[in-house]
Image: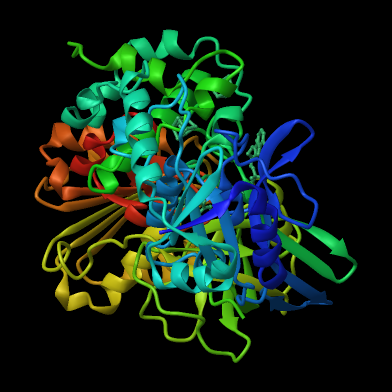
Length: 343
Length: 275
Ligand SMILES: Cc1cc2nc3c(=O)[nH]c(=O)nc-3n(C[C@H](O)[C@H](O)[C@H](O)COP(=O)(O)OP(=O)(O)OC[C@H]3O[C@@H](n4cnc5c(N)ncnc54)[C@H](O)[C@@H]3O)c2cc1C
Ligand code: SF4
Ligand code: SF4
Ligand code: FES
């Protein structure tokens, strides 16, 4: 294990970013979000939750899919280059890292989404263990250990050092580039921090949320629960929960004429919470907000697991818990539905 | 360059036929003059004239047609309006084939087949019917019941009259919703007509049309003694990607774009009521 003095971190980031683009949580307008590190930028590694998740790096909020050149009745397609410059994604928390597995199972399933894949493959991911988890966190429910995240490199941070452990070949080669700035050691400090973190997590209010109801019951039983109506009544359909969620993957495909002879087709995040999401010429299969709200949570707790060997499409990051203006969230749903079977 | 499912092929429209006041059928080949890709009956493709967007359509031509593909498209919104406005020679984009096909080689082989269609719902069935006609000896008796609002709204009526009606062991029943001058065929809704015809409940039934027609026709078939494991239909939901990723077309855990659009009625019973 290696360790870097805290006051050397900017040197570490300058060294990495001198060679490859570096994305990490940065302080911007008083909030922390992932962004491109440049000399002088303000890292926000002490912040537990970035506003949005790092899914942006592989699945951007908006991304050009292709361009069309139009000339009279003729057409030509121009696809973007799939060679993405290798980059380092630093400071990913355990829950957000697990969310990449959830996204992989969608985007890398046959037929592979090469827009996502090319960025995913280009990344060397450095995770950062949590040391101060808070009330809205419930990653433990999904078997995630916030004190030991995976990734190409795992790091831990305390007041004096950033500890560094390479896990993969990609991680090793990144380590080689920064080794000169590091010292050896840190195992004891890391073990101590891990123990303390796990003790906090064990006491968090949602850490023992029981999801067995969703594992044991099928779609129909859960779908027909009368509680959905009351649960969803206050939903504003603002879509915040879906945009901040690290596992939400719905997108829209749109296009516009960018010049007389050019059309740009792009995709952008979309939300199943919006009323026009399923609007068709012949009608709409989800006409009420109750149906849309139900869709979001059924997808996370029932449909996705059904298609993915029981893996939930929630990683307990707690963003929707903190950000929903109406305090509606997946924990409320799990508590309201879990336990009792309806007849 | 990215090799990607979302990147379409370029096709050329070589023929446009006006079927009804709001349905046109477009014949499409690749820029090399050959068929764009192979498909199976019931599969769909995303079609677009870049500028407004893409839409999903059934490939209405039979896979046995080696020269071209056809799409019958009803004008009902932004994308379909643009498609309706093009002329022969226009290049369009096509990607596919998408979705699960009708089990023509598995479950349908050797069976007597009953096709029931309403309006533009004939489009996916036409692909199956012409496939069955091509391999006529592999299938038993064929009965087609097809209805539309008026005589002018029957899609592909020339092919039906000139070809299907002359096939052996092949019965075609047409109906329109309301009486009309010059029409001396049956008048009435499809579900009621189906019950009048006197059908053998051992046939395999394939339904396609507006949800309301499907609902009542299915009820009628069950009353006649058909079993759900012998009845097939297609579902239609909003689609964007066509490959199970954009999260738009699901009913329960099934994505209609890849697990459908073809479903057997007993499979539909397993889905939550949200289609
Ligand atoms: C598997 C499958 C197979 C299909 N096969 C065929 C086929 O063979 N032939 C065929 O003709 N069709 C077929 N369809 C249907 C076809 O895809 C639709 O008719 C087509 O996408 C309509 O596109 P549009 O852009 O013209 O309509 P849109 O412009 O998208 O919309 C049509 C209508 O929807 C409403 N609408 C759309 N967006 C909004 C909004 N934001 N807010 C409020 N209302 C809105 C409006 O009322 C509008 O008039 C198939 C569909 C599926 C899923
Ligand atoms: S659940 Fe909350 S965050 Fe999500 S759409 Fe409804 S009001 Fe907005
Ligand atoms: S559903 Fe809420 S808690 Fe779960 S991963 Fe998404 S934002 Fe985080
Ligand atoms: S159309 Fe995108 S998931 Fe089916």
